[in-house]
Length: 327
Image: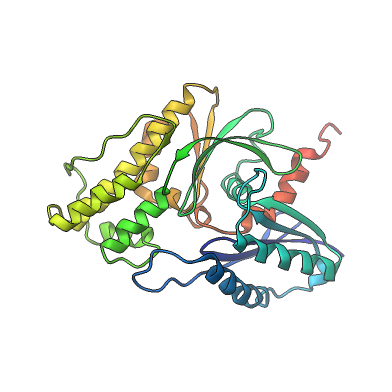
């Protein structure tokens, strides 16, 4: 009897699988971060592909069920829901998903990596809020992406239209590059946050002249990287002040872009996902800024970074929206 959905996501830095039953109960949610050597600021796609090929079998072997009971295999097959969207890393998950689906006679469904993130952010609210009835703003901020989307639930997954973001490097790349420059291991965001917490950093009254924000829907960040590296080289500010200032600046950039977008669209809900959205300082700034005017939805912190639970749940979310509830 078919009763499970298996979700797979093979992103730039994480191999993820998740299993849920048809009622949405989570059976397992597993992932393995791809290893980046000390001092490096990322991985080549071919290296990440090789790591996924090794990681996926090991994660799959940890699932202790009869695979013939899996009725749906759901996978991130490409980065976003746009024509010709492609990254080699997602081919690994796609091919594994197709092979497993064929071998156990399961339905194969593919979504985008961004839809996976949106799904992970609304797991607690998709039944109480009608995401198909009105546009929302969906922000995806991570090491690979800084995009602001107009989104709505469709028959399968979500429609998305990019309406803002960064033109060059992403918010996640900015954090990681400054983090590595400060001798944190890549990826650096969580370690930098922990550093502030471990040192009981008093952020009240911290003042540092930050780069000017353009005030447009699309902004450049590479100059910001050089700006903060200069502070580090000059030894003008402590490590704590630089890290907090950087987090605060990124939060202000997100607010600026979002304010600009909100001038042109009528929405009442904003969801914010991706690894950067887990940062407690950035979260607090965004919540304080918008909580009185909009519903601000974040995924649980453990689901902010790349995961596959969103994929596993997406077919069930689709079913919820498509089924006839008038009876």
